Image 1 (cartoon, rainbow, N blue to C red):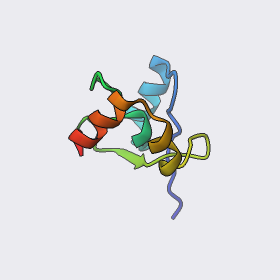
Image 2: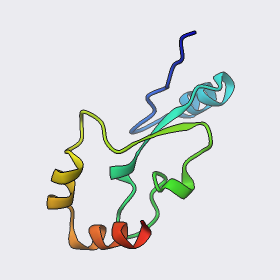
Image 3: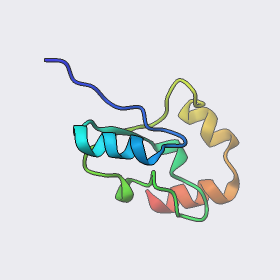
Amino acid sequence: DLSFIAEDLGYTTPGVRALLADSGLPGMKVLQFAFDAHGESDFLPHKCTRNSVCYIGTHDNDTVKGWLETVSAADRKFAERYM
């Protein structure tokens, strides 16, 4: 058996969203994108769809340690309160 995960980060078109829905392939969520002080991110764990895979980060992101050292005070405070 071979399983696939669709990389659906960034701008996605209606066609991409339809392909995910029709195929049943799980999409991706990145936890580092979740914590902005506004609390409106679709990457917040409680907003993640059931059919998705949540990563702390990817090769395109800083490490968690690096993120914690550089994130704004407001975003860090929101992340701490959320968790």
